[in-house]
Image 1: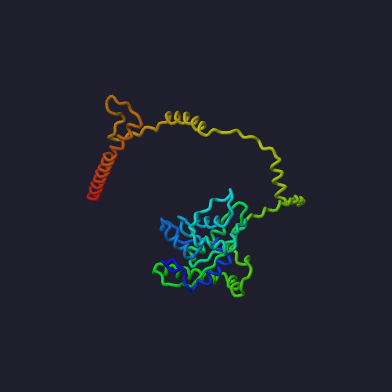
Image 2 (image 1 turned 120 degrees about the vertical axis):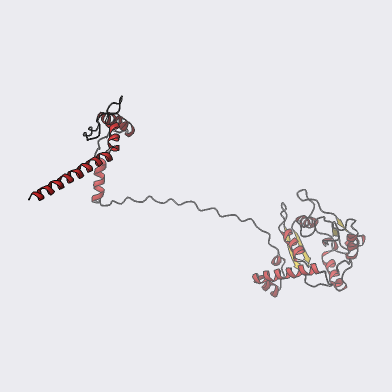
Amino acid sequence: TRPLIDELEPSLQPAWDELLKTFGASNVLIVSNSAGTGKDSLLLQAESVSRNLRVPVLVHPTPKPGPACARAVATHFLPSSSSLPPRAAVVWSTRGRALLEQGPPPKRVANARILVIGDRVTTDMIMAERIAKLGFKGVNVDTISVLTTTLHAREGLGTTLLRTLERIALWGLERRRKGNLEIAKKGVEEWEDCLISAPTPVVAPSPPPPVPTPAPESVATKPTPSSLIMALLHRIPLPKLPTIDVPRFLASLHSPLSRLTSLWSPPPPTALDGVSSKGSEGDAWTPTSKWGELFSREQGAVGVAERAVDSGEKVIDRLRARVGMRS
């Protein structure tokens, strides 16, 4: 149908009649993102679509391509079983139910075949992929998706932009998977040639048992002189040396050395003029106390010696002068 219109596109009427005649109205299900969803709280739009198209409309709170929506579609076509979730509600008009007498009876088989026809990649095609990957106990769901590209009316700017992005992504995928294009050119006649392959669990191959490797044979090698010498050194018993406690040994040496330094004292200095050999009153003479007094008076002793030399030179000069006058 066109956007916001519940009636079938007139150009599609012959194809739609043939569809209902071939599959039967009970084997067709309308899954819309407007009719039968939260946007249609009173299900008025779902009732209108079902009356015009004469087929049931799925009632689903989760829009396409949600996992809950994909599961509701799969359980609608599967027989009721305790191992399967309950079927979702559908809206089916009285006019549509009247077609049950004209078409083939509904078929509920264990291995369902679901053909998803839609015009959106991000909703219809992804939902078909999720239906194919559903896992039910003892049930297989074979799924084929058909993407239509013909539009019968202009759409909004947002929808047009999304369709453009989808076509670009689809063009890139087709270039990478050229095998699918070759199948499309040759034509497909078998259902199995178009199935969406469900993922199969990949079981890693068990590693082969380890092969025991034979032990390497010992090869006699010719001994070298260095190996013989090392073998002899290992056989010679070495004497056991006593262990020395270094800190205790140094502590034992400290006491004799301290006694030796206390017994030794430097010789007293020789007496010089102007330097007394005794200290002040009440102080005994010791080498350590009198060396400082000697050194402090060193400059005075040197000055006395220099004055004595000067006076001696003057006396010699006078004697020379007297001898010269007599001669």
